Length: 223
Ligand SMILES: [Zn+2]
Image (cartoon, rainbow, N blue to C red):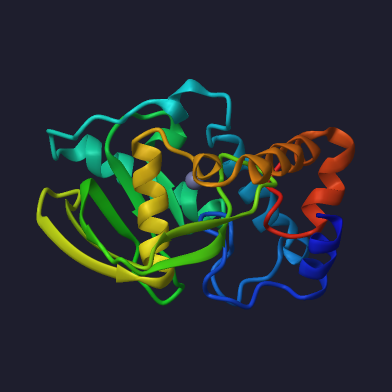
């Protein structure tokens, strides 16, 4: 683990297949290089994200029935929080709201997309493994296997129907966030051994003594 972190430090993320949620947008600086204001905003945003142990992360979110100004405000706030936290996706559970709502922006050049009541219509047989992190699991980075492509139907925050085909990082982040809506975390998608290591990494990231060190290694550590 220590070796892996050193490697990361030396070689900042270059892959677009980076961490879901906690990876900064492509080309963005590592956390240690962030200016103090961006970093303070990120830390404040992360404090508002529910962490492992909060039962809301294990609850199943319920479908949205009213596409009103309250929903639009909820989506706007989620997008803002996601940006401030330098994440690429956020599910409503993570901010303590049990609505089937998620936002994501996998690449800097993409628009922010909100999906309300998303349903995975089909997935590719082809699977891909890539590293994921989670704003609710500070310090945790694990390899997760998922279908490489998905077709999703949903509504936007105005209630308009959406059909989406996604691959690569977009497919990954959508699946990660829909998992949240069903109370599923990346810890549930890895081996028991990997889960043990992940829990250890999370404890270390949360220890006051480990905090500075963990943050210095990059965006992976969101203590
Ligand atoms: Zn997550």
